Image 1 (cartoon, rainbow, N blue to C red):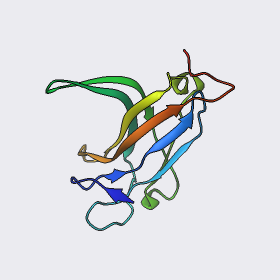
Image 2: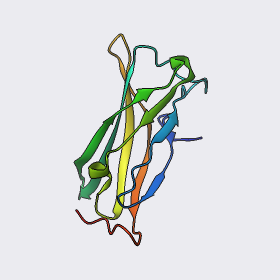
Image 3: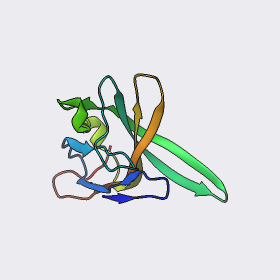
Length: 127
């Protein structure tokens, strides 16, 4: 798995517009590479349109998903399921990240990447 300069996992996703498959991620520690223990933790995935106007970064959130931790939680595996409405975004390139909140309330952004909706024949990606 590729990592960015902050040690976060980088994985890119592309879906046909309107498709809403379950996204499964194995979250790993940036230092050790071992699975993150998600016992009593929560994970959220946020998809946003990120643009720049000069030096100003503009973030427009499309949707946020709560993760379902797979048993055993020590495996670091979490599932995210967008609804059909959430997946029915305009064709285009977006960004996402995954943030974990641990039982002691510390938060870590552990993954990020591109989230893209492409054209298909059945669903045009129009809202």
